[in-house]
Image (cartoon, rainbow, N blue to C red):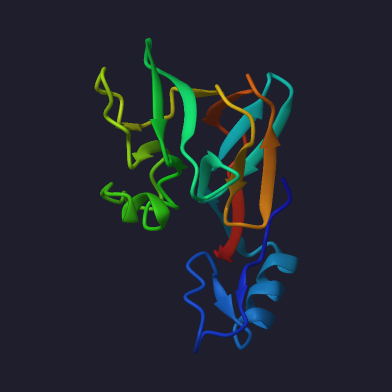
Length: 188
């Protein structure tokens, strides 16, 4: 992965959490990078491996849910040697960097963004005849999480609503640490 210079071009309206400079500071950071007077800040990422083949990395979070926001999501969750069939409105999967977003809104406490972690939180679980117990988890470092779609029309939404990956009925998504962190260029 190539080093990335991150610029917050609109600090008046944008938090730019992973931006390491503004437009005013960009020339100095670019000059430092060109001259080799920079450092690299690694930001841990996760990847979602679909059916053992396609791999998609994400920096913040991923939502595993029904394509129809009003429908229930049915799946099998496997984590740390346990497995359970569940019905809910979906599952948030997050890095520590993304733990202040959707997963926090679903009830999980955030972690420092520099931590190397995999977090997951079930959204609105349906407690039917056999109550579900695998509702949330924190793994630091990430050990893995598997979700199997037990119905059609489940999608993954990676880092927001614009990266949507459809899953087939029976499709398996394995979440794990990404081998390469995102290398942000900072002043050295």
